[in-house]
Length: 112
Image (cartoon, rainbow, N blue to C red; front, side, top):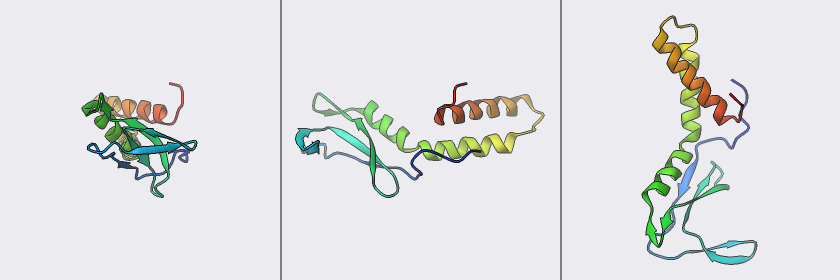
């Protein structure tokens, strides 16, 4: 597989304090940001996911943050599955390999 252009994993989630209304600074302005931050192994933040709706924790937002943080592991799993199934004569294996290759392409921004 080609070299990764994304932030290497593992990715971590920093959850907001749902009880306190933490302030976040952006462009030297303070604002309330009910979001989880996604960071790489060096703790450099590269994504925010809103995880509160109308002042209450949002389960969909929390699930989205967890899925985003798992992306490098999921990409590695798809690459391993595609490699392991290469050349298999079974149709079910080829279907799984095709799904894995499509997911890899989407993760890498390659049009399918």
